[in-house]
Length: 270
Ligand SMILES: N[C@@H](CCC(=O)N[C@@H](CS)C(=O)NCC(=O)O)C(=O)O
Image (cartoon, rainbow, N blue to C red; front, side, top):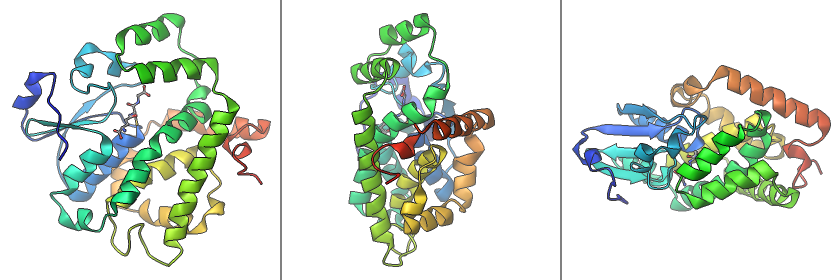
């Protein structure tokens, strides 16, 4: 399993499972779903992304890219949500055995588009941060990619970039829909597996953006099925901030009315 050498040596002294995560981050959601499905207790370390706590020196000594989630299991540090869920499922062969690695890789690869579209179609609902807050993030965070992403978001994303991200997302969902069209119950077959868990938060996130799931009826039926699992309520919904969800829903509606919501990109309305 991919473990990395912690910059903060005190992590090696931790026993049990420790998770650094954010309530509504999709990468954190999939880790919490595995923990809920497997009934593993963990010590929760919340990282407030809205307050840029991932830009603190202390957190960047835990996660070298300054992102969530990070897991420490009996002193072993693991980052990258897909590696973390594989690691956690290793203790539960039923969950891990049926997994098709390709579906996990695709969920991982979908993250960049999910991020771009989340910022554009949900996070733009909030007013931009005061200049001193934006500058402090640029000064304190060491992840050049993330800093550039923040600057690009502030300047406004190129519509062609949004369009391309929507098209790739649609292709990804249509691929899953095609897999499910053979009547299987879950993405990798008849057994619920890590592949399902890896994709559940993505479907939820795009639902908030008003994604037209009627395009992919098998995927929609799958999402209805997996989101009825207790782990979804426990590990995803229970961590949601109701006012934030309300604000996202209202913003999606506003953009829908203005004809600038996610459905107006990537040929989704066509
Ligand atoms: N590939 C990484 C992606 C991690 C990632 O992008 N985390 C997001 C939350 S889902 C984050 O920390 N974002 C902070 C930010 O955008 O400032 C993983 O799967 O763990």
